[in-house]
Structures are given as C-alpha cells and as structure tokens.
Image (cartoon, rainbow, N blue to C red; front, side):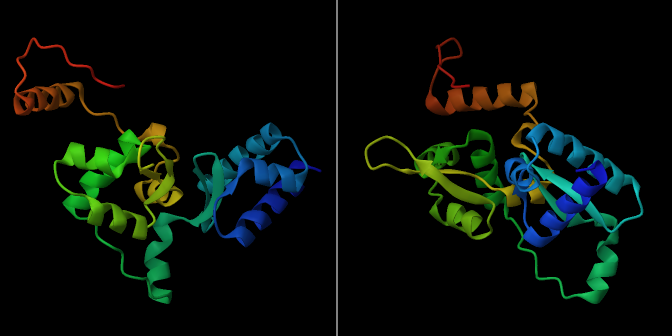
Length: 195
C-alpha cells in the first residue's frame, strides 16, 4: 500500500472512530508495522498543520484523533450550539493537579496532601471525564487508584503527561519548608521524600 493510500485509510479510520485510536489499532487495520504507520501519522500531522485545512491530527499519549483547528472555532460557534463548558474551581484544579502529578493516587493520599476531604472534588473530576479509576491498591480495603484521562490531555493541550510543566525548584523548596514547619520538624531533621 502506498503512503498516500495509507493516509486516506488512516483519515477514514480516525473520522469514523470519532475518538482517539491507539497506534496498534491503526497499524492492525492497515496490516502494517507500527513504526511505518507512526511515520505516516507524523507526516500527516505536519501536512495538516501547514495546510489550509479545517482539521488537524492530535496525538494523545500514543493515540491519534482528528480535531478541528482552534483558529476555526469562531465559525463553528456561529453554526452550532456549543454546550456550556464546565468551569474548574480552585478546589477542582488543586485536586486535579495532585492526581496528574502523583498518579496513580488514592483518595486518601489526595486528602492527606490537601488536608481536607476530597470526595466531592474527585467525583466531579470523574464526572467531567478528566479523571478515572485506574485500578486498586494492593492494601487493606483495596482503595481505588485514580489517574488522568485522554480528555485531560485534550483539555490541557498536551500530548502526554511528560509535557506537564515541572514545579520551579525554588517553589518546591518553599513547599518543603512549609511542610516541615507544619509537621513540627527542625530544618536539619531527615525526611524521606518519594520521587
């Protein structure tokens, strides 16, 4: 199959699916090796970004999806009714950031970091499809582990969790000092910090 034919099939698969498809699924449908398909997808993405086209190819943690170019949203709004976007409150953003950076994480771990109950915030994030259950911790009670979703990546404009910004070192040190003070530890007391 030629590259052009593969591009046509990939475009049809992504359009029909309407959601992100894993590279392995696309390669399986094409009966091609994943690396060849990945190269074709990268070329398609580049072409779509630089062409006067209405769609673009979005990569979401190893999966691919067609999406509308952001510059065309004003035209779409004139045509269709856009559902109300949910606003993330500071509480939801704080909870979401803990989950994004510590995942997989239990509700109890989230509450230990925040210092308050977080049931409502976690449930709201699950409802918004930004967070999902990713398993259970092998501990008494088997608490649920939470992680982020593809929708989280889409909403925050990143293709993988590796693209999330790192905390500034001076901020991290200030947080450590505050945590030590709250815990009543002396500055020289050793503390084990998990990576």
